[in-house]
Length: 301
Image (cartoon, rainbow, N blue to C red; front, side, top):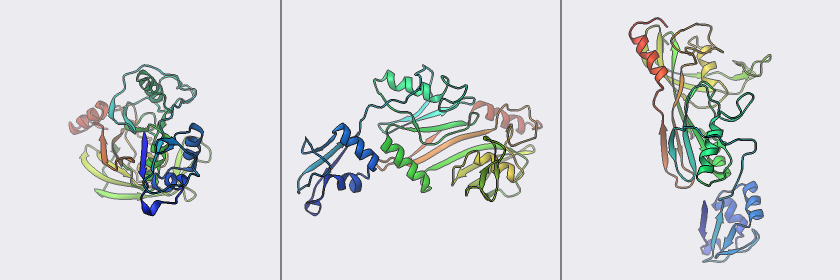
């Protein structure tokens, strides 16, 4: 991925470093990598970042580094690719799969499959998920193809410019068809996994809209303003309508689904290079479709 800047009269006298920082918005960490790889040029000649520019100069930077993610074994698998360009790739994550190797999951993760996919194309890249989903949550997962893109997308997320929409089936029927759950979330003191609503927690905001009222349940759309671990699951429990099948945050048993009924259906953001606004959609998985069909037939949840 190459960046190009033509120096005008107003920029004459500036250094290459100032162009990299202010025009390309590169981090100091990325600039150090460019210096080590000697991939910064002025008029097709390698220069140092202290080089002083004059009008008409053409500054170029190439961030197509070969990178490797250590300890991620490439494993051939059928990936459902929802979107791909030079900057990002988005996958449709199935239930029961984690994103990065952890614990007992070392060679059956999305990262393993994505590593194989990259290497089969002759590309060496680090695996950089922009956000994460729980093991049994399905749907869109976006990966950045280099550190610059990852950094820019994370900044969009922090600025609430990265759209994240989920659908879920909850127990019971919320009285209000739309609302906002604004409750701080913290880790439970006696657990490394569980989260809870707590005054000592980080600010956490979830917007919801009931899509359809079902038999003693509801299909709900969730839009995240923040992205805390287990945020939707904890917030649903807090308002008395836990997600169906949620083994951590619901004590209501169900035979309709073997996982929490939660799906990441849409992610939207601005592509850092082209400034194009895109949305990436994933269809509702079959197990959740079946749950809705059963509840519409009057089956007890």
